[in-house]
Every structure is written in structure tokens, then in C-alpha cells.
Length: 229
Length: 369
Image (cartoon, rainbow over all chains, first blue to last red; front, side, top):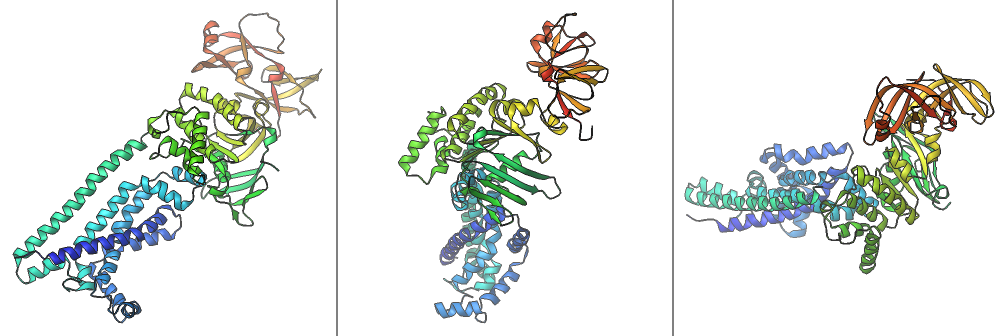
């Protein structure tokens, strides 16, 4: 009976890197979705939401084909880095980013949409560019929702299984995440290890979510207090 | 050209009305403060948004001074950031997460920080906002918020001020007081300003020029009192809220006066310049009607009409009295006067109107009710 600490550390690292990448990708995407009036918005929103409804195996299969040694992406990456994307940590990051995209973009979009357009227009008329208006006005006002998106993304990446298994396989120290370790332990009838590692995941997830709600409650109290007129 | 705003455009809405502005010209020399006046839904806010660059016309152009702000045929649409207008939006739209001082300094980020602080302090002092610097918008009163919104717009050194219903979020007494304040502040600034309002008192108190907007069209433009006293057409008269509008027929003209038959009554008005029309709409503002009790009096007013009180509608400090004097006539009197005269429904008295207060509108357009 033992907790696979290696897997725990790897999972946390994966969740952190994927969350950071998703913030960078998700903010501009959510801003576009929140402000555009183009018809293409519906299609992009549907595309972003796809991972919510597709079985992880479907997404994993496509990713495997896309990142594998036979695809141009896989081959190009192998030329640069000396090893392929599939069954590597980097491959897991790409998979996690795609799989968790809706968990970032949907709360981000809702948060940015909740900012009163009259405030945004007032900012533009004061000569402040769209870019600066985003950082000086929209981000501070949408803060609770953005925080929720970040935490949900992190927590969701912590616990994903199917896509990771499809794309990453089970390479200790490289792609063996907590959920894979648990599955592995159960397969080899090591229920004690599985139970302990599961408990660890439950605790980490619970702590992260609690932190978010506590923080959000505070921020919300402050911002409600600030916006009430 | 100076600071003249010239607008000639059409904005269409899908499944909605269109807003057409033809030949709107704001010239600083005719008075810096122009009021866009009309009922809600008349399209005046759309006009303001197009001028600010927040909305794009579907046709036409907008120019300011020598600059083209918008020209649909050549695809020019200057972003709101580059028009250098100071917008005071409806409901002030102060940034809730920033202090009052940060709100005022928000648009002046191009300046060095010491200069920005100096300018912010100067503007706040000018508007009487000292001591509120570190407060959040929700911690100050409605009147103060309104002044912060003005300070914020002025701090970016605009060339044109745009105010959308600037006092609509305020209650009666503060609103009355701020009207006068706002006019003198705008005069001190000496900037051309375009103010949107649906309130007649506000339009008179604030504006030099009045532009009447109704159902997406500009009906009349001219000096405020002129437009209110002498609307050019029936639609304009309705839009500016003339209380009594009745059809009449000119039956006599002598000594610069015309006599008009209205229903069973005769009304005397100044002869209009130009060829007199036979069919006219008689337009009388309720505030220009005086009610008199005594019989057999002699007065300078040309119209002394025996009238019966039909209805009394009190509104705040005033009461609108609906009279029957051969046609339906409305009079606006103070509540005090109403009590002194002991007005009751069905009572007989005299309605007095001076000839210059009877405005005749030539009946060209079809009468539609």
C-alpha cells in the first residue's frame, strides 16, 4: 500500500501548465465571444463546448492521430525535440488544454458579458483603447467569474482520465497521472493504494474548490458593495 | 469651420424604425449648447451615439470642424477613441471599482502623472467635488455622481460634449437645482455641447438651440424659445407638447390681426408674415392662458373667452385646467391660484389669452388624429 507521489506531482504540474495555457488562450477567445455580434460566434461556441458532450475516447483518438508520429504535427515536433508528442508530457498538455477548454471559456465569457456595455463604451469615449479597456475595466469587474474559470479548469485537469489514457498511456514520471495510477492499482487488485490515492485527489480537489468559493465570496461581497448605487 | 458639427445620415434598425438626420448643423456661433429634444423612442439617443462613434450610420456622413468622423460612401468610420468627444452617458456610468479621483483621471492617462494629478484636482475643485477623491461612486449622492461624470468627460479635454439625459436619474429638487448649475458650468467651459432630453423644462433651462426629433426625424431646429413658442408644423407642435391644438378658419384680417373661427368661438392672433392660409391650426400653450373670475372686465389681452371648467388635473405645484370655450382649451395654473379661484368642475369663468400667444400653423399637412 502506497500513494504514488510521483503521479500526484505530475498531475499537479500538468494542471498548472494546462491552466496557464488556457488562461492565455481563453481570455482573448472569451473576449471575442462576449463582444462580437457576428454569426460565426454560435459555431465557435459550439466548437468550444464539444468536449463537454464527446466521450473522452473520441477526443483522445483524434488527438492521438493528430499528434502521433504519422501526422505532420507529430513529425515536426519530433524533429525539433527528439521525441514525439503522443505518450509525452507535452502531448498531455495539448490534450488537457483542448479537453478543458469549455471549463475555461464558458465562465470567462459569462463573466466578461456581465460587464455593463455602457461602462465599456464610456471608457472608449474617454480615449482608452479596446486593449486597455479590457485590462483596466473588464478584467477587474469580471474578476469573480474569471477566478471561477481558472479554478474549474485546474480542478477539471486534475481529475481527467480518458483523454489522458488515450494520448498519454501510462509512462511513470511522464504521463502517469493520479487517475491513471488509481486505475492501474485497481487493475492489479491493489485496492488500498487506489483508495489512498483517490482520497488524496478528493482532498486536493475539495481544498481547491473551497479556496475558490471563499475567495469568490469575498470578491463578490466587495464588488457588489462597489457596484450598488 | 471651427467647431461646427455637420451631420447628415440615416441609421436603420433591423425590423425597426430608421433614424434619419438631414442637415443637422451645430454652429458654435449660434450658441454653444444644443438640445436634442423628443419623446423616448424618437431616435435622439441614436443620433448621439452616431456622433460619438458608438453606432454606425448606414448612409451619409458626420463631420466636425475640418475632420471627417464618418463617411459611409468612402467607408470612413473614426473610432470613438479618436473623436475626442466627452460623453456623459445616461445614468452616469461611473466605473464602480475605481475611486472618484481615479474615475476623473481615467481618460487622462496620456499625461504625466504630476500633470494628471494637478488637472484632476483642478477639475474636481471647479465642480465642487473636493474631499470626495477617495470615495467609491456608490458612496456619493446622485448629484455628486452626475458631476463626477461631467468631470470625467471634461478631463479628457474634449472638443465636443455629449450629454445623454444628464439629469434623468435625479429626483425633483436636486434636478431643478442642478439644471441651473449645469448650464453655467457648460457656459464656463465654452465647449459646444449636444444634450439629449425629453424634458421640456430641462430643454428650456439648458439649451441655446433646440432640435426637435420625432419618430426618427428632425422636425425643426432653432433658438429654444422660438421653437417652443412657434412650432413650424403640426408634428413639431405635438412633439414640443403644445397643449391646445385645434383646427380653425381665418375669417377676417385687419390692423395686423387676424380673427380665426374655432368651433363656436372667435380667436384673435397676430397676422402671420407671408400669405395667410385660410385653414390653420391654432396652437396655444397652457401656461399662456390666464383664468379670470370677474365679469365685464376690460383687459389688454385680445382674447377674453367665456369658458366652463371641464376637468382639473393636479401635477405637483401646478394644475392643468381643461376648459370648454367653444373648443377645448387647456390652462396651466399654480395650485395656489386654483385654490384662490376655488375652481370646480362645471364652473363659468373667463380665459384670457394675448394675441401674440396664439400661434397659427398653416394647415398644409393633413389633419390626422
